[in-house]
Image (cartoon, rainbow, N blue to C red):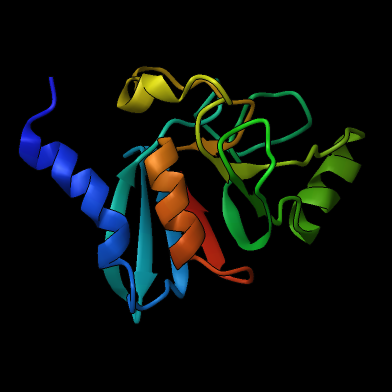
Length: 161
């Protein structure tokens, strides 16, 4: 059961963001299962994450269950996602498309940072017990709302192994 302090902190967190500096970069460390929001090279926030169901190695093709690795940007957002809000990652980049062309496969797409599936928000942090996405980066619903506010479209994102 959550303590009063934890519940109060969760309720007041959005208020603390007013006037908050926005992120100018995002770093995802797959091996550590963490997403960092950065501003001026300093860590603003750190989030524990779940990844694609096959987390090791870079995404090679559509349907492989891997989370991409490399440099991208936040290229859009979907308030009406099947997951509680989603931020589109600009995968595939030119390097990803070239690699897929050489292999004769589709690179896939629709890679997002997103919350939990609609109707399953009560899972909260328990969703991180397993990597479960098709290649996306998943956080809790409260966390995606915070990331949504702090990371504008165009924010560079680096996804490391």
